Image (cartoon, rainbow, N blue to C red):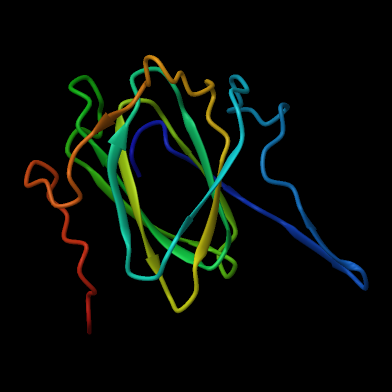
Length: 151
């Protein structure tokens, strides 16, 4: 696992009315600050990558569908420098993933339906000065192949 990445298994509490799933609480031991909450979607087969942040931590949860979330650590002082981490998260694997600043990340929609992803970053988005670095999804500096792995 990449240093600083935290996985929080999410508990789904069903009853006859529906279900409840807590995602992030301010008393979670890894919680630092609240910036904002947003929802993004990804169509099946679409890759949204790569990006990272200098200051903010992301807290990502897929609440509908499934995504393949990939993390890459190229922080020079990290004990996991050069590490890749691949996670499948969504309805069948409800997880909150804390992604520390400086870790490159992206995801691919997998399965047959649009995936709905909630992110609760530790900082609000600054329109004039976004805390976001970007690389192309197929950047050779990140040793990852997004294609389907058969076997």
